Amino acid sequence: MIASLFLCRGNAFAQSVDVDKEPEPVAIVELGGAGSWNLKGGSSFGADLAAEVTPIENWLELEAGVTPLFTRHLTEWDTDLLFKKPWTLSKKAEFMIGIGPEWIHTRQYGVTTNSIAAEAVLDFMYWPSGKHRFGWFIEPGYEYNFGRGHERSIGISGGLLIAIRRGP
Image (cartoon, rainbow, N blue to C red; front, side, top):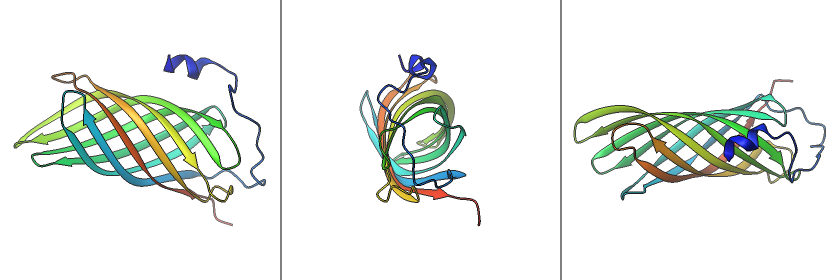
C-alpha cells in the first residue's frame, strides 16, 4: 500500500503553495529524541539525527539518519536511508510517507549482532514562520528486522528541524 503511494502521480490532498519565493534549502537537519517499542515486549530510548535532501521537488526526498537506542543491557544503533514522497499541506505544514532499508547494530549482554531491516514512516513537519528556517517534526514508524527473531517494533521520533541554505 505504501509503495503504491510512491507510484501514484497526483497530489491527493496537497495544494500549490508559494513559500515567499525563498530558495529551497540544500538540506534539512533533524535533531531530536526517539523511542522504540518491540511488539514482543521491551522499549528503548535515545537520540535522533538525520539529514534530508530533495533530489526531485514535490516527488522525492531522501533522508539518511542514525538513532542510538539504549536500555539497561542493550545498545542499538539504527542507521537508515528513507525514500519519502512529500505533500505540502500549507506554507507551514508538510507531510511525507517514507520507506527504506535500515542497518541495525546491537550489543546486548556483551554479544554484538548486525542485521538488516525495513522501515516505514509517516513524517509531519511544522515550520512556525512559514519561511522554512527552523521547525518541528514528529515521525512515527514501523520496523521489521530480517535478522534472527524477525523482531517488529513501532517507534516515534521528534524534535527540531534546521534548514541549511546556500551562502549569499
